[in-house]
Length: 180
Image (tube, rainbow, N blue to C red; front, side, top):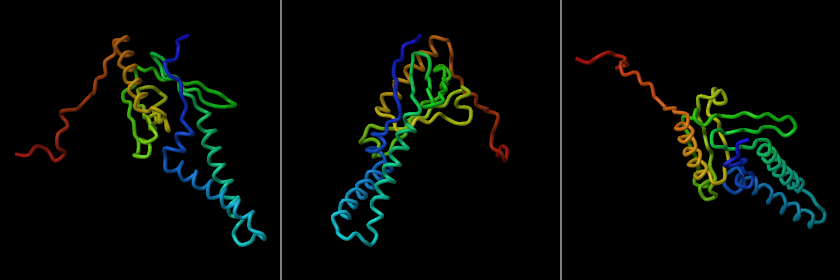
């Protein structure tokens, strides 16, 4: 069995500290917690104090849902494949041969940059990405992982003697035809 070069999941903690949605969830939970404590200190409780426990519960449910979503998929990188392990109860394994990868892109916001978090998009000629690129969100050390993937893709192509060729139709000129 080929040994993994890297193994990772989308980061729930990274999502919390590196995205606006994560910050919003933290804020929702903090307001709910502080408001709940304040409401309990007030005797008798009245008005809209019931809203604070609901806010806390909503924030915790959002956090729990994100955690389960991230727990459900593990990405494993070997020297020649990117393997996706999906599922918690019912599992499936899919892989992308690295020599088939056409592009590895990284996207990140200014908030993501502070947390060294990013979204990696992988386009390949593999069936896994037939309907669109494979999107891996909330990746810790995304820049380093992207560079590692690019290096492994190039090495896999060299070892298999595969070259990437872009087909461009040069005979497709201006739709209106030649000017003259």
